[in-house]
Image (cartoon, rainbow, N blue to C red; front, side):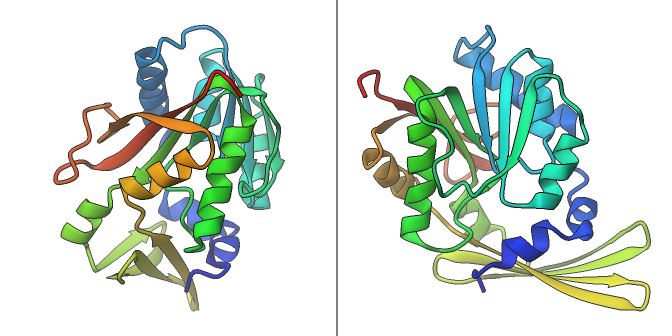
Length: 246
């Protein structure tokens, strides 16, 4: 199921509608708290990998940071550009390939934006691209789902109606992934989309970090930056740092 699903789904108009609850205020509160916790109060150069519609970039730009957003989806990048942010630029780019080298103070990969292809090499390439983009001493933040909670609390079926469009969502667990089928009923038309995300463990990220010159600094369990407890955490938010010597 994993092959190429993201190209179809992320470019579909229904994607924005289903995930409209991801608001800019939530993004701003999280990022403000995160950067304050790491004493990043002056203007920084930040790369937002898999930037989507630019909601995180908008919050960062408003804080006075300089943001580059990259995403494989042209539809999402166009929406980000429509925000007309003063201190942000956006490009269509595959995050598995390097973008810039030794350029950014921070690199962000937020809201479960990797593990889509179930390829160990692709996962490593995402982290490698991030590490290359960082200045020595720079930090990478990966915001991922908590695989332990996903396995424990799977909601296998739900129906949502948004603006008279019905979304029928089925979820299924395999050995190492969560598979989602989204059936969209828009009047007399019906469309089917898929999501498939590999259930990466903390040990997987530690392996990627060790191969790319990064070291884990901490793991948070939610957007309020509480400590990560695999049994209760809503998210798995890892902060890694690039060596000062590189």
